[in-house]
Image (cartoon, rainbow, N blue to C red):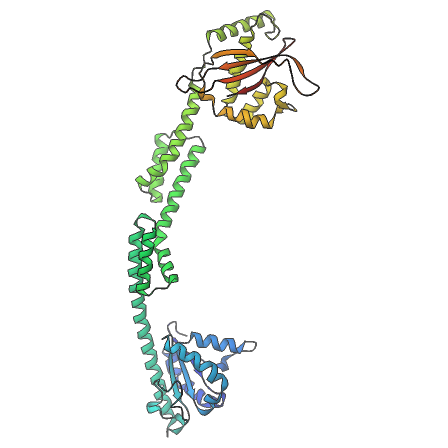
Length: 441
């Protein structure tokens, strides 16, 4: 069957099967030329649902032949099923119905009587002296019907293409910014109704028009992913080589420089803030106050002399406290969370631990919060007040340790203001240890 051949459905009474076979023979040249393909119910195969199959073929046919005879009209299925479907599709211009008068019959009041009938002059085929001439007349009529149907469909296709082009042009116009606003939607809906497009057809056109924007959005998303991946891998700030690679990435994705800049701004601003915070933690003066320097020198001297600074009464509590506070800040500023936790557990009092590990609640409410607030305080650490909290016993039930808890208040940066931070340190009664027992930053 030729690709563009029109589908012909033959509706007839089985009592006229011999005449149908002769007609089908005369249609062989039309099939040979690729003008038509034909179907009738004798082509049903075993196991088919015959009623569904017949209706499917009727609904898909381009030309429907009604082989008119007394038996055809007397057939309930032909009269009540096939003829109504055929005429309905004919009126909708979905198919062309061609009545073929096989045998004499009073059909002038039939619903198909207004249609062009064949053979010539609507003379019944069985009344022709030469029936072949009658069938030739029918075949010529079918060829003409096929030509008219093809011409009509070509005209419809061209008209449809024109309508689609008009709608597409308007859609592309309103999509210049990549979005259809409420006002623009009203305009498109009105144009759709004017052009006679269905909502489904309009949706198909809009989807087609949006494809370039969709592809561009995908390219923007890919460029954004590349930026985030570079930052996550620690390549920020970008060197000249990476900048060049990013320019090539923009080009390969077809991303406009101004759009790349807009995408990059928020991402790079956040990266820069994170970088500056990290740099501030790393580059702020690490020099201790002169007091701490002196304490370190004294500590080294004591070690050289064989003394333990923790048991040496001459080593001041303030010095120990300052060492612990600085150690705490070192721990909180560590980029490695696991190491940070491990180091804190070494300087933390047992009251902040569970089975030797940091208490989860303390980690969540104090430790993690403090990490985000380190930059609020002066560096080097400046202790501005100290005092006894009143607690002389501290620890887990049954394992409380005797001693004294001191609270040290440290200064915030002058330009920030706000409440100062505080660190609590528990000094054991035997003077052998000092541990951080809490803090609020």
